[in-house]
Image 1 (cartoon, one colour):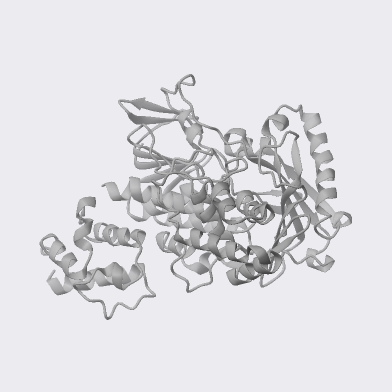
Image 2 (cartoon, chains in turn blue, cyan):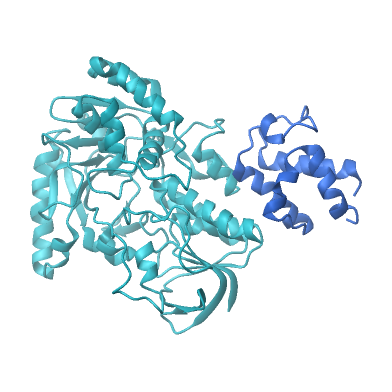
Amino acid sequence: MTKEQIKDTILKIIAQIIPDEDLSNLKGDIPIREQVELDSMDFLDIIMELRKRYGIEVPEDDYIHLATLDSSVAYLEPRMREL
Amino acid sequence: MHYDVLIIGAGMSGLAAGIRLAYYSKRACIVEKHYRVGGLNSFYNLGGYKFDVGLHAMTNYVPKGVRLAPLPKLFRQLKLKAEDFALCPQRMSVIKFPDKTLRFNNAFDFFVQEVADSFPRQADNFRKLLKTIFEYDELNLYAKPISAREVVSSIISDPLLSDMIFCPLMFYGNAQENDMEFAQFVIMFKSIFCEGFARPQAGVRQILDVLVKKYKAFGGELKMRCAVTSLKCVNGKVESILLENGETLTADRILSSAGYVETMRLLSDYDSASFKHDVGKISCMESIMVLDTEPAKMGYNTTVTFFNNSDKFNYRKPDELVDVSSGVICCPNNFQFEKPLPEGMIRITNLANFDLWNRLAEKEYKAQKTAWLEITLKEVVKFIPDFRDSIIFTDIFTPKTIHRFTGHINGAVYGTPNKIKTGRTHLDNLFICGTDQGFLGIVGAMLSGISMANFHVLQKI
């Protein structure tokens, strides 16, 4: 996957978890949870969906890397490059 | 057979945990000792009628579109749609004490106004109490327990108002006698007063059907009539699970909704002499009456009436078989249904004493049920229209019945007063969910299953 595709994938997962939120103006460098109503349980589901769909394991200590859209792409790129 | 996770009990919390785990591809198995799912919130048929156990009303009701509340959170976590539960909101509920009445519906402002009108001198204090409630983080699993009685009485100076606020919150979700943990008070206050009551047309069956279907659709396994007899402990872990039918299962992790003390008693190394933990004492008698008419036709439109007829509201295990001085009257007909229920029904819940009921011989047990029903009815018709001539069928269950069907010690409907909020036990792979983990009520129970599955399984791998 390219960086652009990874970003799309993350946005699709978020859209599935919180379908009522408008994600079109989501800024890449600001924590996702500051921009949309996403509680800690929803956040966990992003990580769970990554595992379920692509087999990617994000250990608890690394959750912090998924705070913003940009940092998520940077963190996931080496793990999703080959997909 | 080996599973990623074995769940003990197919009640609200076990099923909710199961859905989470099965959806995220864990090999999950729920073992339930009864032939029916639901645990403390279940159902039965008798005399050609359908009855619910537990659920009077679902608390935490918010209209579709509200996102930041426990109920929508639960729908998202369980991959359900709001329509799946088909919830119909209540009409009006009421708290009736000797000299005062407070009504509430699903619009919180209405209740705030009721308090201001009935207790004008407490209006400012009530606003202060609301501020304290809204600023408190009730979901912090590591918070030190504080007494809700102390917090509330330091703000509300009229003990009558204080008692009237506590009455529904205690009846619908408190394991402690006479006091309540403040976090639990906040959870119940929000779920009952700020949010509200609703019920599916089909009652608790609707909710349980949805949960079971979802769990199975995600690949979860459910074993009914399958009691656990022992959890074999080796080196600080549960190594295997022995079932009543002689089968042995193994699992990486175990989530038990059987109750904390109840679960500890299943451990192969359980030592009754050294193990100390409070057991719950709060149990009830419930009388369910089928009427030949709709309660509304007798002028009774109230959904739930919380009543107290003594000077001070006492929430504790009574010294007699039943405490008729206070209780809850629920009318399942009085929700905003699209079509009326097949028959009129009134359910009355009173606090009751497990030990006294449990020691009665069969014949005396039956006689006492009949006798106490009569006393109860005499008391409740002081608060609602006299419906006694319309009764065509009655069923009563007691703390003994609750114990028999749920296995909860003392038939304690809200479990132990000392909750295990983190869900952890002294064994590495054994966790508690449901009533004894500490989120009470039906929505609370499901959220308990969800959070324990999240914390102890999904986040850990």
